[in-house]
Length: 468
Image (cartoon, rainbow, N blue to C red):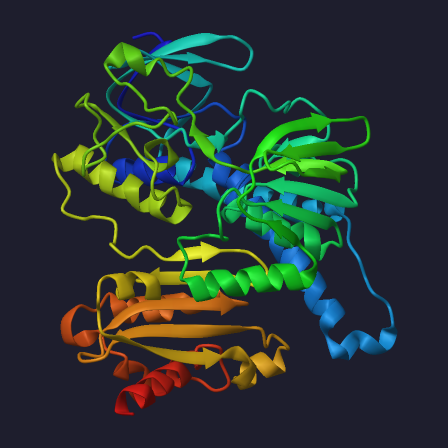
């Protein structure tokens, strides 16, 4: 056998969370696995352009805001600032650590890493084109497509212009903008609105819908709108662009409603497309949808039996956390022919705006529409000793529970550390039957002072309403 025709039990294309989860599970079960990654470093979009850098940026900006608001340092009379370039240095350091860690997984588990772009010759043979143009072929019994997604680029927007960015290229921002237009007020748009406003940049956030993050509980969505506006972000709802023009020193956006908005630069953050081009999936009988996504069954198997797909390339929920699990479930099905494990029904949402948002389970609007007799328990962070100590009084925890059975139906948190706090409630919600009750939070002794204590406060508040 020649080197150019190496044989594997399974080949995974793409080293993001989904691909990594699948590759590790297959390798740990004795399969000869290859990882094909077209970029020079492992980790995928999650590590290099998405989750990791954006959350690292947010952390730096959040600490800056915290410093400037802290009365301990008020006596210095210095309002400290940071440039985007300075906070990027911290993000790049985190990326390097993540790449090093993730690379060690492949070495430790004996997964062959091949850097290059993969394309199907047929269901069991792949053509790999390396960066220098070198071509090699590999054969395999099974394939996992985990190529992820990229920012959507409408054809009438000039992304080659030096002042027009998407959520990947914004990490290469060279100048220091005084103002920015963010087009698209989804999770990415709202997170970057928080980041840039925290750096003192004027932000126009253009929302194509009637409210921010409409999948959230309305109270939480309203809280985010209030705090973004209170920090100085201009939010424009129900707007769509007519045209976007780049100039030497800025960008002008014209809306279909007749408005003109000028800024130093523009971040287009409206939608994502699956990375399907170049794979030649048509040759193996697969047809992606208009978003470049593939259809799979409950085992993440495509219509071609030996080819599977996980992560953003299959669409919802498009979360790094879920992609890891999809990869492991997919690999188990590849090994055994089936997998009884499924993604949990209530996947927590973590949104890293400033302040942070996290939720799991039903919203008030959903429960009302379903005519479920529910009640609400609330805890305001400003009443918690830990929040007062850390000067993080903004935020609240809301528990939705069944009036008659006390079953916890939904948890919604707004404020610093929300994405961590949510998991305590999630753990109780996952205890089906009698194990899931709001009374758990009353009968459990929490450390004091902690943010977790919000559960006890919220539970007592809710039960007091029921007892009337």
